Image 1 (tube, one colour):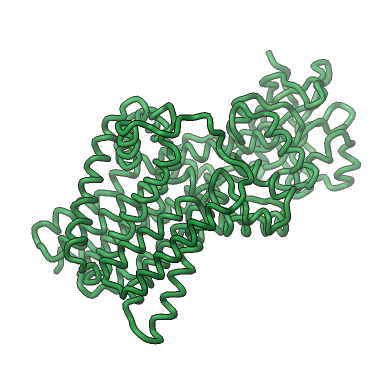
Image 2 (cartoon, one colour):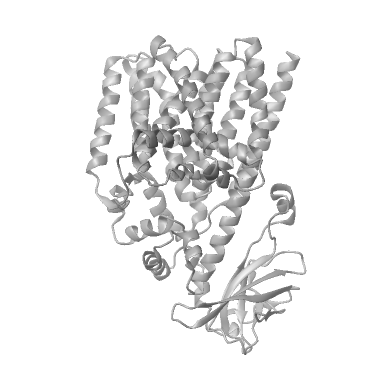
Length: 579
């Protein structure tokens, strides 16, 4: 008993540490500007009514419920990505909570098993390997709505075995949850075969099974009939060989394990995932073998109602493997098998392994020797995945910083290079990108909502008036590169470091010429030195800023002033010309 109490304490501490680091890493690495698919999606919103925008399919996905959230964000918050991030984070919490409710209600397993299951659930949901999705408010709203809908359906599905009036409420909730999952993202359609299998194993009444079949078929029909806003160009082969399909599946399943292993090596894990795919293939085969071992006995016995812990694990395993099969159906035609290693798929495959761990914990809880082995492995899990947790967090923070710097380029109306466009959007699509940017600029959304672009070309006195005070501004900066404005005029990219006398880092700065005309704006990468040391091991620049000077003339002296809270600093940092 004392030994189990120690295990429970260690599990509680590990849950707290992983949860706190996961939340901090997600917040610090969140996308703060419009990115990737959403430039094109927003452009569709601008040209259609809210109802038309909601019912359209995007890249063959119905995004009905996430679209309502994004339209509300555009209307009430001017396209600010922060509200979407917090909604997505809340959905992540809701998903984990809904999955934990049946686990803690299970009276057939020990308190230690519940503690270990909670640890696995927190690691699976808040691991930064999933941050390509979870750090993006838009993507997280889509995918976490799917998982939250699935978790809600799993919670109420066993209650559909009731008869009479007690059946109606859980039945309606399950159908509603299935619809939310299905019309939030394409992978959500996997909820219906998952519910059918689980319902059959639960020995639900035939009319309940029939209702689930009808709901699934109805969803599929509606899905097919929904009009397309735009879709993926049909330029890739769509009928892969069996070998390629199996390799895709194995690697989709095994890549999270490989990512965690390769994170112990010096380079970024993704480099090794592409260079050494055999480990992902091997672990994928093991994962599918464990899936068969977990599911086949329950198909024969149909007794999954005995343990809600095992039921939750099986539900996660089935739902996420079916979601990966949908990915396989849509993506395995790619000429490059390395596309299977894209981190966006970790959102699903990490939860697949989470479900397998839950099934394992449930099945060994009554076997003293085996359960100790499993419990020790589970306790070691946070340590094993933490290097990947930290490395992915560091990568995501750097992506956020690069995106914010590129957004400053858009505010200053300079031409971004291909790499910069690739950070915010997709490489090779500059025309579509700038069309969407102009739409955002005209509507003063997202990075254009604050109106910094209106300052350029005005005298600083006309913008700030008498709002000036000493800030103790110090630093250094230099012209790092010569670029072009959108009208072909020369511009300069300025990089430097700045800090105030109080030790704070200025967030927004302006570039002025000798006559006081504002020629551009700059943004700094602000992060506490303490947080940098504790969470990122000091690997980030804490006071760097990047800005642009429009109509740059190397013969003119330029200066940089801070403008936080609408107050212009009296001190000025001189811009050094490029050497």
